[in-house]
Image 1 (tube, one colour):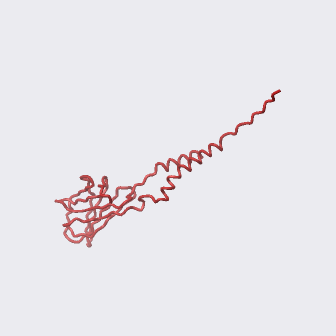
Image 2 (cartoon, rainbow, N blue to C red):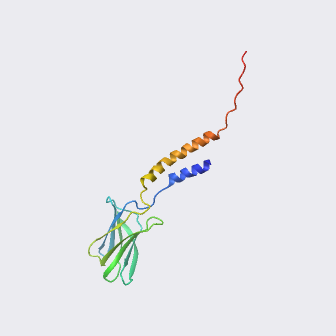
Image 3 (spheres, rainbow, N blue to C red):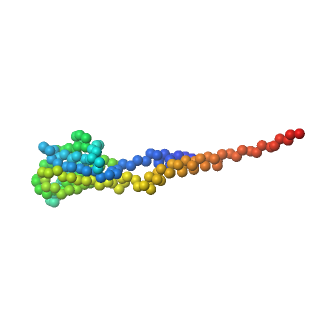
Length: 167
């Protein structure tokens, strides 16, 4: 019983959330012979360490994909795709977190002349709700109390001492 309670407490203490809790703004544009994407959180802070892939696809099925490399704080670059000009769907896919691929999609005319703004929505496993936070705050206290009560109950009872007669 004790091992189970300790295991549960360790699992609660070690849980973490790998997901986008807030929307991520991305500005895509062409600079020289490179496609550049600037990733920023909603507060304007640069997003670093992302695994970002672009997909450029037109109505006839022509499709080009590549991963962008981080070049600076919140800046990702890749060689400009060599495709014919025209109407395309630009998809930016973020696969930073395991088991999650968030996409932002925008219809564009290629080659890009003006910057394009795309927004990755928050993932469904983003920030926990208030009830979850309350449960995660109270659960360790309740489990600790259960452990204390269990220890007190399982203690051996002291044997009564016989009273001494004094003359």
